[in-house]
Length: 287
Image 1 (cartoon, rainbow, N blue to C red):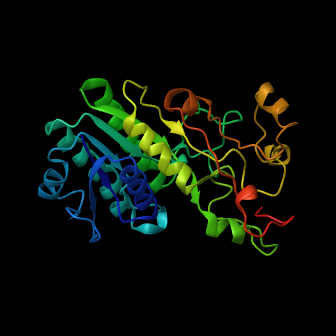
Image 2 (cartoon, helix red, strand yellow):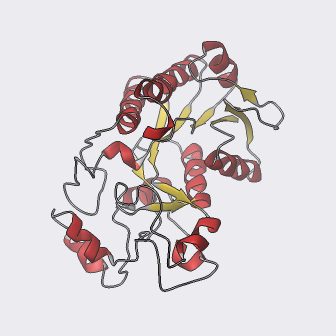
């Protein structure tokens, strides 16, 4: 069994390949950037020859490659890479006999802030998506195509929706009283996920078989905000699930994302939060 990791030279890609390698799983890497691993392939997702070479003999694909935000390219470039590139890769993988396709979507596919808002809190899998930017639209369109393949073909798909991905270096910075918060805090409902926790979710998804395709939300157990979660709820005047509201008595900074389906189906739960991991703890935090 051999895995393919696309976007392998990015921060998440490197974390995923490290965990795959630690488990003794054979893998190949693919990225627009050159890499130093034996067998690494450099190429573009929309190049048929490059994708055919990348998926040859592959059983499982962890697809991380993407333009990661609306500032990463023009709307045309974002849609071409994130949608057409994903479609081309998935179709090529299907023809090559690949069994498993794990897709890195984003919480931004939901479009729950700005022009949109959540229907209720915490946000869960039943939340309708209302994307309002090219990046958000690209992630949702790619999800929809992969869900179609999951229903109509033998390709087994799992979709993960991480928020902002953080690591130990950032946790120390977040503890500074002068720090204003990581990018897209409000638009991602003040959610974040630890880099290693996030990588582990993708490995678990690649190893699982017969699971529902999702999409599955990822998040640390708490928010990145200094404000208690009950105060954050005031930003969105929507119904709040009673059991969630009661749980805030025990965890005042609890995440606004419902991770129960992710835990139930994939066996994943967050293990690292910025408050516990900060090198120089402080009463101040991002907000």
